[in-house]
Length: 154
Image 1: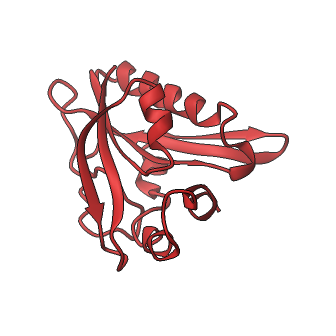
Image 2: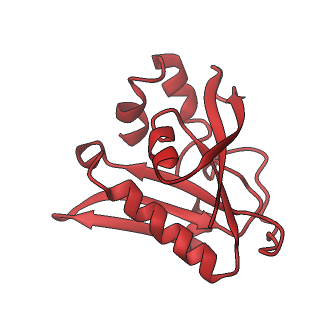
């Protein structure tokens, strides 16, 4: 629901459909215990995580994943799989999950974080201090989906 509903102002239908090919839950974050969920009024309001692994973005079905561990002294932690239920968008849920991710990564010695933002997520990340590094396009789902690699000092 978050992918379809929150991307509508930014992507066309073919890009939204293509997004499903590489977006989604990354169960490695759950196994690593680096994934957070926020419940509000009995509903999953949002979720997201951070990773000490090399994969930059993408869900379980994405190609090109790497479980190699990052070195906190030189590599940035990865913020990953951030989703907000559309009914809770722009109510602080994403900001809360992002803060939890940053605090946990910092506690493990990471000094920077990186993420790959969708067009709908970019305003939140900019407001939270992330800066653009590189514009990228992912066409694994058949249509080119614009994304933005971003970074922040923790």
